[in-house]
Image 1: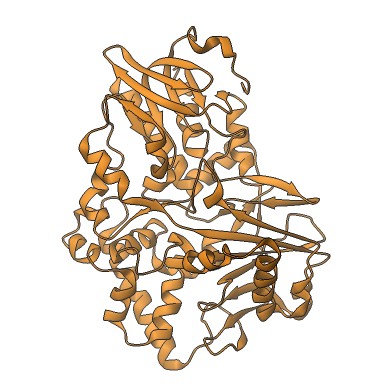
Image 2: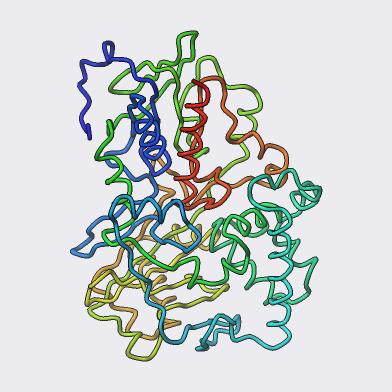
Length: 458
């Protein structure tokens, strides 16, 4: 793996068959697939590391997964790669009762998947879940824009669609949590019902999103970033090499970065759509791309980590799983590392709640977050040995999390164009995946698909 490009190569770098922009899972899978087919490939990465939105680090002596980390049973592309790379997984701890924070401020313990709400609200949640499951099955995740109902569902926000279906506000808030705060990390009024259906369909069903034992099933021993590190070990990867310009010409493409210039037959851009405008294209991209990219944006979520001397919640027969649609920290999970005697909790603060949290200074944020977790788990949660926050919106080469989604009307209008090559320029990222959308699994699928496009193009 090359990590320090020769500055003298700026004008004399040898040609490659393909240049890949971005060393996240999508870009590395693209390069890995092309290299296995006999092509020469160079990967240019702006950061000082590989992994994209997966990142593992040691903070104050604690190993933390600062980015994407979970593996679910349906993520067969990721599971297959883990086997191929010889990486193992371990299950997330979820034994015991979960906790639910009501709108009235009461914390209630419960078992199973059904939140402890009144019978009428439970019935409405079950009905809404069935509606979303039916829509996910009908519309699917591969071409949701082709559905006869696409325009109808894309013109109404998920917030308002839920309330057209049900007058039970608690049921709507609870159902909305699993796509809005939990996945797209935007307020439910900021994206369409069609975008919500795509999110559900990409996981197999909306019921899968409700089942934390499914969607958050396992973790990779050594962290999810180790998947990218293992792929990169056999590739030519140039770190700290942000690409500034891609020029297309009769012979191929010229990719210009701060530290090197490479020519190739084709280029694969494997970064989130919100970063496309960081690159100048000569000639410019077509009007359709210029318009489409302005209507794709990442959400906002703060991932918080709290490490304790022991997993104290287990002593009380609790799983560490907590939900509260009205709470500052809407979700909490036991995130204890493999074979670690300490206990780790991970929590998430999304969309407008994250806006408010980021207005506070460091100490006030910590106090607010730990106070919210303590509302679930009691005063022991107030004094972790290690506390850390992952704020991907502040990362120059990400600027949000977890993934990009369209604003109202965008998916039906432009969705079919997201992955279409523009001449010799191809696209690969989890943000445009079908199955595995916004997950590492989707990134791998899109990387393999982009590589096949290049191979087919000759």
